[in-house]
Every structure is written in C-alpha cells, then in structure tokens.
Amino acid sequence: EDKVVQSPLSLVVHEGDTVTLNCSYEVTNFRSLLWYKQEKKAPTFLFMLTSSGIEKKSGRLSSILDKKELFSILNITATQTGDSAIYLCAVIRTTTSGTYKYIFGTGTRLKVLA
Amino acid sequence: ETGVTQSPTHLIKTRGQQVTLRCSSQSGHNTVSWYQQALGQGPQFIFQYYREEENGRGNFPPRFSGLQFPNYSSELNVNALELDDSALYLCASSLEDNYGYTFGSGTRLTVV
Image 1 (cartoon, rainbow over the protein chains, first blue to last red):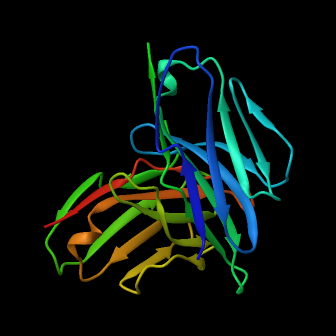
Image 2 (cartoon, chains in turn cyan, brown):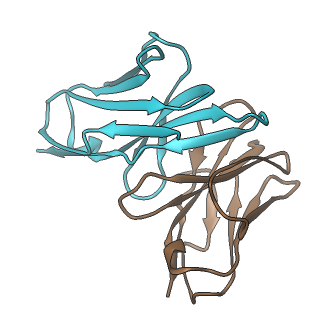
C-alpha cells in the first residue's frame, strides 16, 4: 500500500531557530515529490523534487530528495512567526494504466514563537 | 490572491442528498485535480482531469464523480452524501506537466 509519512507531527520552535521536516515514502512507480505550506485553507506550492541529491532553494527554505533511501527533507533556517503553518509532503506516482495518483502525508504542524 | 476559485465556500447538506462543487482553474491551466481534506489530515486525492478526460483517480467510490469543461473549469459531484463526507474539498490546477499545483481556498462541506 502506498504510504507517505511525515515527521514530526508537530513542532514548536522560537524565532531564529532552524528546523528540519521529514517525509518518507513507500510508493511504486514514483514520479515526483512535492512540498506545500498550508496556513488557512489553500496549500501553497513550495518545491517539486524529481531527481536525487539536487537541492532546491527558495530564500530560507531548501529541500532535497533521496530516492535510494526514499525520503525528503525540508529545511527552514532563521525561522519567523510567519513560517507557522502545516507543511505537507505529497508524492506523485504513475499507475499501471499510465495515469497519475497523488498521495499526501498528514503534515507537520510548525509553530514559531516570537 | 490565488488564481483558482472555488464555490461555494461553505455548504451544509443533509445525509442522502447530492452536492455539486465548482472550480475555476487558473488562467492557462488545463489540468484540474480534486482533494478531500478531513480535519487534521492531509488532502486525499479524489481524481484529476486533463483536457476534459479523467486521467487519475484515488480510492473514492463511484458516487464521487466529476467533469471538466472546455474552458477547463471543473465540477465535483457527490451523490448519496454520508456524514463522513464532511470535509474541506480542495481543487488545484496546473499547466501540462508542471506539477506545481495552485490550490483554491476550498469548499467546506458539512453533512448533517
């Protein structure tokens, strides 16, 4: 059965701290892994990772994928209160019929204290 | 401001009724997918439409059905509503092979 597991489930840090969020997966026919930030309703796209070992960066956020060990991490440096959100990891796999299936983890709830 | 709009924002229905949720995709996007997000859970993939054809489906029963129109807007229909269908329903669109989906703000459905 396809599985995407995120850890920790929740995290409380202080402004300025660095956090690392984890996403491990077990899916067949992996295609891509995506990270999203969800604050109120609409998740906001952060990164899409397809190749192993290539770090993607956007400001204080960075992410990397390890397709051998089947996991990805999302790093946030110098955290700010505005980083408080649920961070979702999603994996896209192809099916035997050539269509796509998307599996989300349950998310990591990050709270950054001033 | 997101380019994907969903309507209505909130909805209350009675068990056994049918509901239609609507989604206008971001301009230029031809791929739309729908998700169900229960409280405290990650979004669960319902299905995806590409150029008016369904090209991916999650583990949802046939009473969950959809449509994509020539202008790439989309509908999610749920028949014979059950209490467990109460959730936030998210629509997301993307352009061709760009999987960086843009999400709408969702429709909060409550079944009583």
